[in-house]
Amino acid sequence: MKLGYSTWGMPKVPVEIAIRHISELGFDGVELTVIPGYTTELSTLNSSERKRIAKLLKDHHLQLSAISAHSNLLATDKEAYEQNMCRLKGGVDLAVDLAEDNIMPAVNTTPGGSPNQWEELKPFLVERINELVDYAKSRGVTIAMEPHIGAIIDTPDKMCECLDLVDSPYFKVNFDISHFDVVGFNIEETVTALAPHSIHTHVKDQRGQHPDFEFLIPGEGDFDYITYLKEMQKCNYDGFITVEVSMMVQKRKDYDPLAAATLSYQTLSHAFAAALIDR
Image (tube, rainbow, N blue to C red; front, side):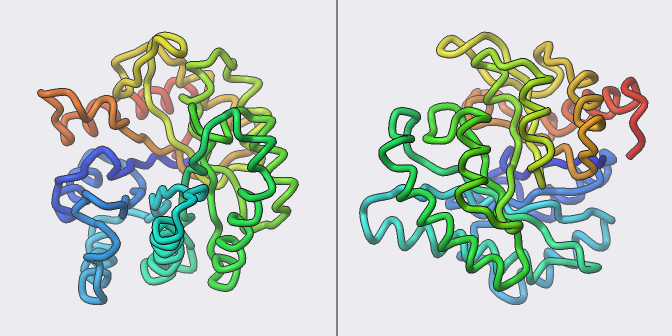
């Protein structure tokens, strides 16, 4: 396994500063966030900027693990849906442009919707996922769906059912265990269910149980990363364990994106060592 960091936690940090800091800390890779409001918003990434980012990644010896292009697949407004699908397909194209050494980044998204819509909107969701996955397949890119608290896919069972319905090797899981931890699922059951289907991951820290919970920077809470890493290894997961700092944390008045990355690296690198897992 390798240790990565998502620029989700660095919306206003220039990409050259973000990449340099992530590399200097010792991370192995980076997930690039391209949604609106970020310095790497997709619409700003022309050909020269893509070449510059590719060079930055190479010069700083970081692998691009994924593109974070989170967009609502269940938008009912036609214009909004077209914009969302354009961003996701554009994320696929970006993954191709930034791939190096035949290592293709995944494109991550959440599904949208709410938990009580699962039975009603499941066929509609699958139809839209298939549209995206068909495009990704044509370019050799995998779509990674992230089950998310409060979204239509919010349990391991729903995610596994969705995988069966789409039934494509180009559709896998972006496994963020925090969304299961805060509703009471234990590490072993969620890892056993989802690690075999995962192409990418997110980790945070967290405190409390839904609805009275908060997401934290790794090291601020008491999540058992050592057990988590050992369970992931048991399931033969060999991809990135990628830190994602939530919007909840970013809303703090004193939030420092570079300090958050530093604490995250200290916490996860120590967990890797304590779990006796090489990177």
